[in-house]
Image (cartoon, rainbow, N blue to C red):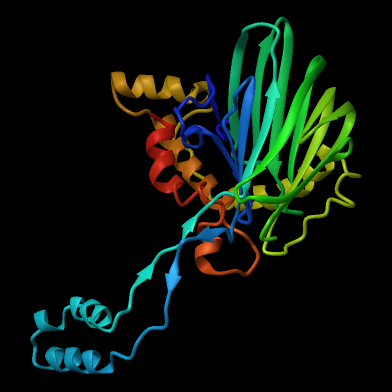
Length: 341
């Protein structure tokens, strides 16, 4: 196993907060969290510019407060020049602010009915390529899902494969009340009532499809799902994208992602020590101390999260660094402490 790949032996299982243990993907503009469930998957999608609940009124004139603070500093009375004076002066003039809170664009629901219990489960992320995978066996049939969020064309691409034909039902749920959702045998298109969020989903490969209300049931053994999320009027068309194969899109993506990831590297342990899953590394740490391989994996994971939430597009700072919320904004404090528990 490569030192750039982290693996887990079980799906996300945090009750009502599956995103905390989901596999993170992102390109700074679009973020995706994949729990890795077997029967009912709920994949979270987010965009960098989706925020709500904040207020930012014009700042009142508090020149006299600054002048008084400067005078206090000149006298050497630094306590009197405390920044609390600024907060007090703003409150006295009725100035209040409230920070925006990020919210997701929506969720892709996939329903698959296995014929038996699953086994040989693995999920993980190749941090060097930005590709997630979920694989398991059911009734002597091997199933594998892979996905990445392209840095080249800002489209989420998923590949669904199995040893034999299987059926999965797809449905998309927008965070905001949707104005319309069109489901055809070619795919799914949803747009929110306010027009700020939109998603287009198309399929290509060896499959057949059937429509049932707002759900598209797809039967196949090797096909690709193309998902483009849009916000505030950004491009949502998949024209020209669905004509490309998974491999073509993945190659274009890795040229950009891998060059960022390889810019800095450390090696604290041998290649063989990275064969262990996250759970195994943590069990060993609980019995003794954190291994060099675990420390290296944590470092690589933190770097991967930052890259996945950083966009090359020139946009506002908070969106650039915290673009794929909750990948980074919650990730910095949650993933490194919760994901590796």
